Length: 375
Image 1 (cartoon, rainbow, N blue to C red):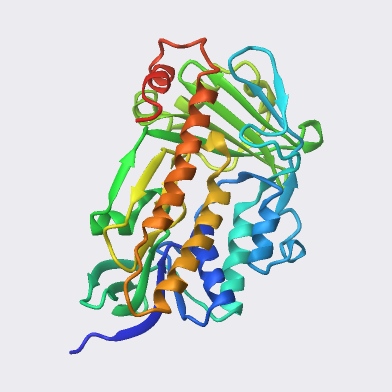
Image 2 (cartoon, helix red, strand yellow):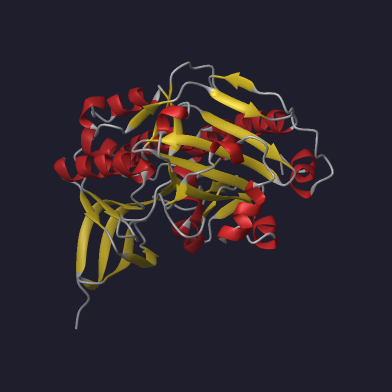
């Protein structure tokens, strides 16, 4: 029996902000056909994110008005209070940016609106599917084998392939793409229900401890996110994937433990998320790029994640348009150079920020950040 083969211009693996932004850019500014292959069923928990007001300019480029999002998608955040390098509070509008306006983003509402717009504008989204094989043809196009619980196994023939799978870098790893990891940072967090959010200021709070740093922020719908960022070996050693271990670590804080007292957890154990800094170089493969966290991922302290995901998607979409409009191959080196330039500036800022904390310079977590920040 012959395998079923479908054809598409651009196949994007991953339906987060990077993949969705690339799809919308291509749908808005070209006539290429677009398919997003997403492994999940789109019901996974999405961690909220702190963003600047510049996000609305990015949405303008995607031709999406702020008013089209559900109420509560953007919760104003009135500054950042940090207990970092000192037991005394330091309040700023942001850490890595001077922009005054900032927001706590409801990622679930945000992500689904982008996906909704893709469908409205003629794109295809295929959830619950796994890309199991990537075969590049002589003309640099791709045959991708896809498995789906209802559709079964079939092939998509695509002129261009995009990795938007986030820090997991699923496509790049399958293709043997070079990737450099700078740390093993992970986040162990919980979502909390709070009875009276009027008593909690709409700001983000950061507090350092001997083994890492804590982040908390108010979310829409009377919820709060509380996350401890540390290295993977520390998470294992102190069993931070378990509620008891996580709560013991919380008790080491001086401020946040009081802030969340009385709140109830939405799940019975913490979630764990990869938060490492890494850089990918996909220039060796024709008709293929990585975007968003699959191209470069940043420490959450930078608040650069979603902004970079979207802008890298815009630049990636422009590159794809140029490639598909000509017969000869177009190198991705210029695209990669832009990513590496941004990444280099980020590394300098990250070093400066971590060096502000000197109280636990001999502990494993902080010692690593004083000796190995730039690889």
